[in-house]
Image 1 (spheres, rainbow, N blue to C red):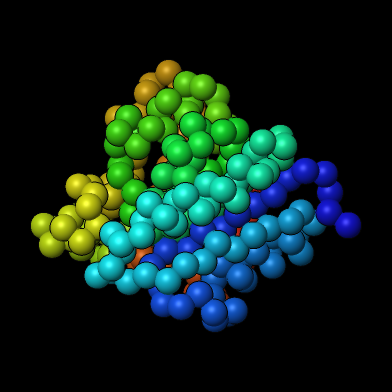
Image 2 (cartoon, rainbow, N blue to C red; image 1 turned 180 degrees about the vertical axis):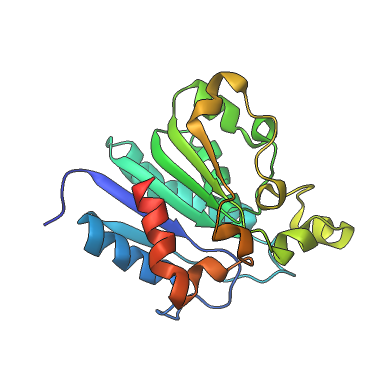
Amino acid sequence: MFDGKTIWFVVRGIAGEPSNFVEWEYLARDYIIQNLTVPAVAVSYATSAVTVWRNRGMRAQRFAKILQGYTARDWRVNIIAHSEGTVVATDALRLLGWPRIENLHLVCAACDHDFQKLGLNDALRKESVSAIHTWQAGLDTAMQFESLAVGRILFGIHRPLGLDGPTNVSQQYAGAVHEHWESPWDGYGHSDCWLPQNFNRTMDGFLKT
């Protein structure tokens, strides 16, 4: 039986058809259920780097609809989002007017680095988010590509959070924002945290922070 009204969502980034049940979001979902004894939901979708801009709004709307079913009933919601999944997650939360979120983990984030532009300063001001954790990979070539001119055209984002970490964070609420650059993240590539040899350590980092 699940304990109380706490739930975790894990939101994947760019990939093919969401039908492969060995993908990280399904493994992360099961890890959370098994270790925390709370429900968890894997959020999947199909897109590629070339078509990522297409249906981005629809993906956010769909996730927002799912989230609202829990935030409206005062569930303690936690989110782990990776790469393009950080765009989906932050767009969905913005659509909902920043509902209450306990922990927001932005992993190798493709969303904008500017907290003011992203709306996260407003969320912190409203005390809508208890803690924001940003996890940066030191060898993230995907985020380096996104910051190039061609990457900006494809992704529509000037500078990704996963490249330099958060900027323009309101100093009044900076204590709720936690940047993670430490080992082993400084030696990771964009998705290395999900490799079998790193997976448990990655998940424990999220669940114990």
